[in-house]
Amino acid sequence: MLLAEAAEWHARLAQAGDSTRAAFKAWRGASAEHAAAFERVQTAHDRAQALGEHAPLLALRQQTLARTMLAGRSRAPRWRIAAAGALMLAGAPLAAYGIHAWTAPPAPRATFEAFRTGIGQQADVTLADGSVVTLDTASTLKVRLGSSVRQVTLDGQGWFRIKPGDTPFRISAGGRDFTAREGIFDVRTDADRVRAFAETGQLMLEGDGSSVALAPGRLLAVRDSDVVIRPLADPVSFTGWRTGLLQFEDTPLAEAVGEFNRYRTQPIRLADDRAGALRVSGAFRTTGAPAFVGALATGFPVRVKRDTRDGIVIASR
Image (tube, rainbow, N blue to C red; front, side):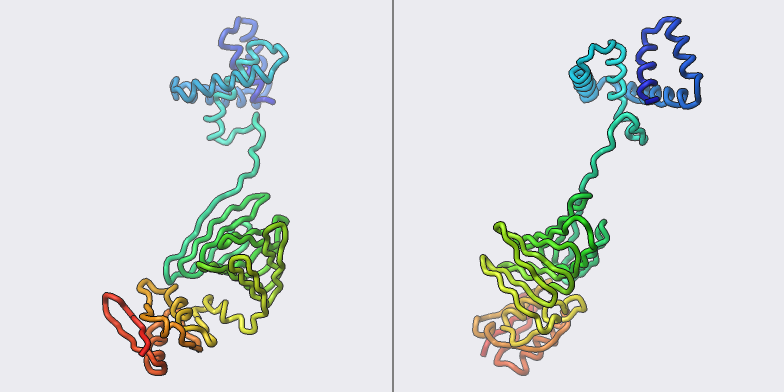
């Protein structure tokens, strides 16, 4: 390897006689590649010298020489060991300029990223593997991708369009682990449960040495140790958020208010459990809380109070 040869010549020249210098000139003049290799080693040496005798560099030099002598075990000439040490010492400056000829290529590393949406925001995230995730309001996605890993952690709600790949795509959500090879899935975490809806592909819920398969058109809900899978006749009730829609069907008012509050910086409050137990149906925009509250005030046995301090408060009457 030319760079290794050049480093050896550089080390020998420090205490070289006339015959060694003549041999070096012959080696360097043999080709332009020889001359260029020696110039690179000389440049690296000069940069290392310019850094000074700082403690970290001295420690690196000592560690490098120790490793070289332990690995050698073949009683190599002293100048060869010194050359290896000089080469390793110069490694940091050379690496910064893209020269790695004497080192093994680094193993592929996973990349880490994190994404977050604020209250009322949504965002599309394109991952390095080509998969796309749409995050709903107040959601966080942590991503770890590499040649042998596709792992994300979700807090909130995300619509996953997973690109096919040899490596399984793993989703951690609310303390639950899902895997898929490809497909389209909507996953959501809440304080007391995790839900997932499969549009295409198969999503596997993993745990305790077993797995549960979620087929397209079905909704999975996990609460504590209970797992329930059922067909979803109207997917919009779970996926409507992507188009800014909230759909309720005989839904407790407390749950409906909770859905609106996910998109509001000032939440709607319920004054009592009786009001929260009322059942509501209908479709509203995620930003349509005023229209929703207005409909409640005219069609339900509730009183609505609005003020700057408490915002909107709904009480039974």
